[in-house]
Length: 169
Image (tube, rainbow, N blue to C red; front, side, top):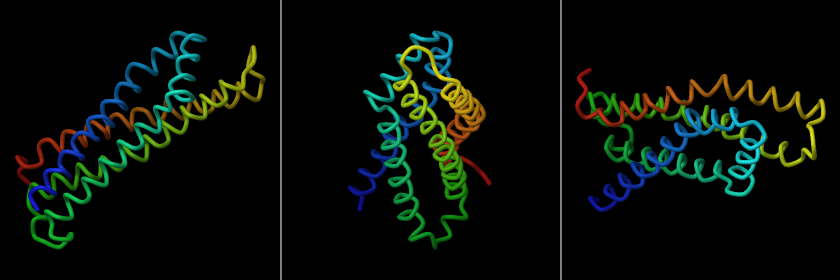
């Protein structure tokens, strides 16, 4: 059992670091850099999404973190049934998991939007058509709306997961 817990913890922590770090880096720095550098940034974004498929890498990390974390919580709570769930640590990890799920959903919207931008960008020959420009603007608006939710929930999930054992409820 200790070996399984160790493997699950390592999977959860490493995947969450990759997921959270990538998401925060994309949202706070790379996305702004892409926006500020116009055509060069668009080519870079297309390379990230269409060639490197960064959204798939981040999604795999997110799913791994969530599945490993869920299994850890299930084991610690004896199948979601023990009094541990009502302990400070159980509540802290539960709150962190809730913020993690919010980050996952908002990240899916964020990543899907970036992937759609990459596909539209790959179709543009010289200048975008009126329809393509309207699609790009709608997607960018949606990404800007969900980005603060994504980053905030990611930070809160990290804070609660890192400190759950030390919280007092």
